[in-house]
Amino acid sequence: MLTKELKSQKELVRILHKALEAAQQEKRASSAYLAAAEDKDRLELVRHKVRQIAELSRQVEALEQERESLAHTASLREQQLQELQRHVQLLMEKNQAKQQVICKLSEQVTRDFMQPPSQTPVPPEVADRDFLSQQEKMEHLKDDMEAYRTQNRFLNSEIHQVTKIWRRVAEKEKALLMKCAYLQAKNCQVESKYLAGLQRLQEAAEGECAELLRQLIQEALQCEAREALAEGVELSPVSEYDEYGFLTVPNYEMEDLKLLAKIQALEVHSHYLLAHEAVERPLRERWAALGDLAPSAELKQLLRAGVPREHRPRVWKWLIHLRVRHLQIPGRYQALLSQGQVRKHPAARQIELDLNRTFPNNKHFTCPTSSFPDKLRRVLLAFSWQNPTIGYCQGLNRLAAIALLVLEEEESAFWCLVAIVETIMPPDYYSKTLTSSQVDQRVLQDLLLEKLPRLMAHLGQHRVDLSFLTFNWFLVVFSDSLISNILLRVWDAFLYEGTKVIFRYALAIFKYNEEEILRLQDALEIYQYLRFFTKTICNSQKLMHIAFNDMNPFPMKQLQQLRTAHRERLEAELRELEQLKAEYLETRNSQGPAVPEGCTSEDEGEGEA
Image 1 (cartoon, rainbow, N blue to C red):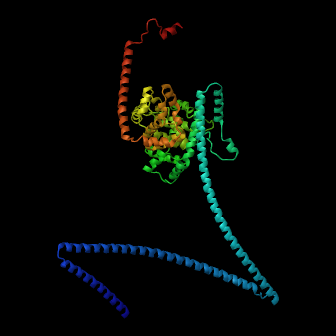
Image 2: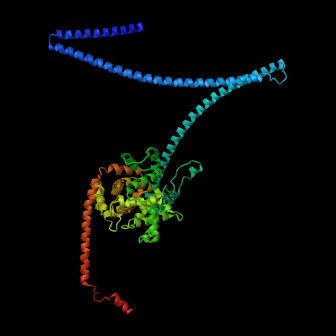
Image 3: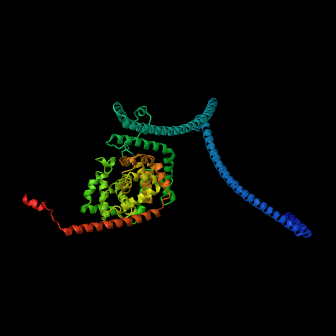
């Protein structure tokens, strides 16, 4: 106790010494402050003290940070110590278990060497020989164990080397596959250029050369990668049908269009191979990591870039549910089908006529054994009962067919059609007058004049009317116009953002082919080119960039204002037309059904007969 009290007294004396030193230092500072002759010197002393205080504060902060770091280090060391203690405990338990095993083995060896009491005594010479043989066996076993240990180390090193070699081979294989895809893409590009060159030569050549060119073109159209397949090299040639059943090379009657379709298929395959590693794979990884769907800016950008095929049914069902959740009633689709079985709908005959005209280039709608035509019939009949004001309009068959190809389920395709007609498209879009459709054509003309003035001036000079082409684009959302690889990307964004996407892509299609159209100097050539020019679009990434970047700014407010203005003008024109029609009928009725002189009426002709 006295020792502790002495230590505390010493500590108190040390603290008092420090306090005394601090008081003396303060006294000296005060004396210097009072001894200063001028305010300037006193101010300098005060500043010096402030600097000292600031320096001491920084030292205190540094020491505090050091203390925290030391405390953190101490906690980490404590955790390591606890971990080591647990490890030591495990080793001790393991050692104890091994000692128990050794004790048991020792007891067993002792029992083996001991003579059982029931047996006859063994001569010492025999026992010595047995003991020596046992020792010799133990030495052999030790040698075997050492050999196994050496062999195990050798095998482990071999496995390590083989693993390193396997990794290098895998990396090399990946690089070779990428190079192979790149070379295949380049080969497709070269082949498409070769076919395009043959096409130009065919247009210019005559006589024997023309016949030779026709043979070369026929061989090129029928050529496949037979040599590569015969050698066992696994390539990915252009298949006959794409993943949704559309012909990759449509079977046109005209030879020129056949050649053009082959060129376009090669270009599409080339762009796919080049973009697979750089674009498609990262996009698939982003979709796989997305998780639960919720409206967001990230989802909007992903939908514009396109949904991978394996995720598209799930994403489309979610987008459709967002649109029609206030309309969906459990069992509604089956109830509509039952209603159609009781009573035949007036539109049933027109639906039957249009079934055979739905996507003639798709195997799912042309194969006699396919179930898709029956599904499409039921979906269209159910919708005709769901929306009696529209019933059925030409074009709905293609919208429902696209939904069936992606979703495959009838009910999901039915609600997709409801979502497009009743929630996404403006009212009266599919009515008998097609008022909203006509309005959108006028809006598109204004936007083309604003975004592509050179193209519109060129088309106006040759008196080319684009509505004969674009009207169908809007009515069926490009279903007949774009190849499936691009079409479904358009639909991905369209189901989320609405009709503005159609305007964006319509402008982008003309921008994509603007230079080609400007080269044409004859109205007939322009019309012929516009018949199939959408099928020549191969680069989906380029078209998407034009639609969502080059066409900006594209505010929805501007689109709504243009629609309102053109709707008022169109309705005024329709009222004027109705008035003219009424005046004409009134004039016609007032004149009566008089037969011109010298003509015989139908009744008189029948009487004479």
